[in-house]
Length: 133
Image (cartoon, rainbow, N blue to C red; front, side, top):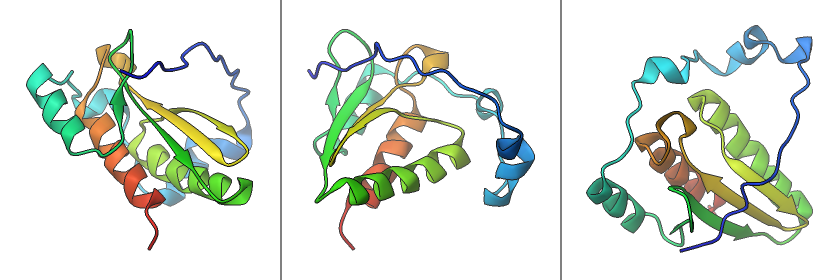
């Protein structure tokens, strides 16, 4: 089990630049409520985690975690930008932090109080983005 940092609070300041209409250029979004998300059963969680190299269950909560290291800050930030676009399209957002070339990511579906298929899908996409071409 991995200890995951969940004590960070970030304030959101609304901006007219980033209204739902502005993000519409990336494709049609549906709200997470419309996606009928369900908490994974323990056997589905275990199978999903087995298919995700280097992702670990967090200690003390039902979430998964992985730490990524890049050559430098620019590469780490570029990775985060790509993940952010995909996460926004999914309407499912990671908990993450960045220090220089390291990006730590925790995934959980707060609406179900644990892991859902959305977390596994996002983790697979994050691995794809992080893999060298």
